[in-house]
Image 1 (cartoon, helix red, strand yellow):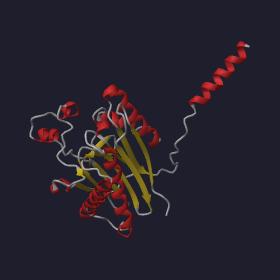
Image 2: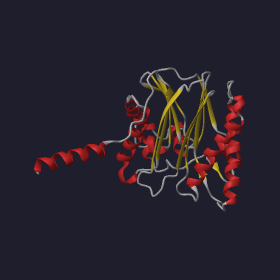
Image 3: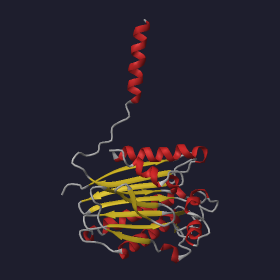
Image 4: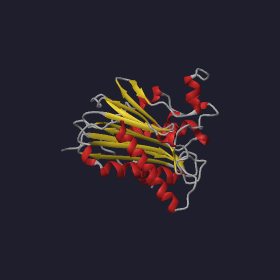
Length: 278
């Protein structure tokens, strides 16, 4: 079976010293798995946390690949997250990491369904027809304030408590309730739709309108790179790690990521002017 999916990926460190985000896309005959994890920067081992949780989710899906030919339910995603936490905890303990956390948003896309699960404030956007059809709700103090009417949604990205999360994947699993991901089962993507997963570095800087505009680019690789670069540019010295995954149905003309050849033109231009001056 040919691969039905095309995708674009970008992950930039922004103004941080390192990139603690982890981005993964794997395509199989049964469907595509997309993951974004954001290791919490203030905690030891954030980069390790995001890497290991992503690895754990992938390992679970691979081990149960025989079940992916049929629709999966929320229980499957819950088990994947539990396995990822156990995998993460075991590896981190071996390395002596005692305090490590990460957000997680993952999506399984198949011909029957689109399943999204998340913990924390890494988001998924289901987009089509020029609008956001579905958006995950952050597990954060600020989202709770929005729900209670104390904060306007437009204030979320700049609120001083925006980084205070209510649910994460924790190496010690100190709060078992925090391992219950929010899960949404949606119809399969149509040809005019796409799914975007991102860390908070993107949505804190780029509005939903700008997301839609950025998705207007024909190549998903260019769209992801454009959106991540735009977010980092807008935040400047405050730019966080910024990661983006965009998944859509493959078109008849596949998207090809072209190499950056701008430097070649600079060399040719310099050679041309050197010859004229001589």
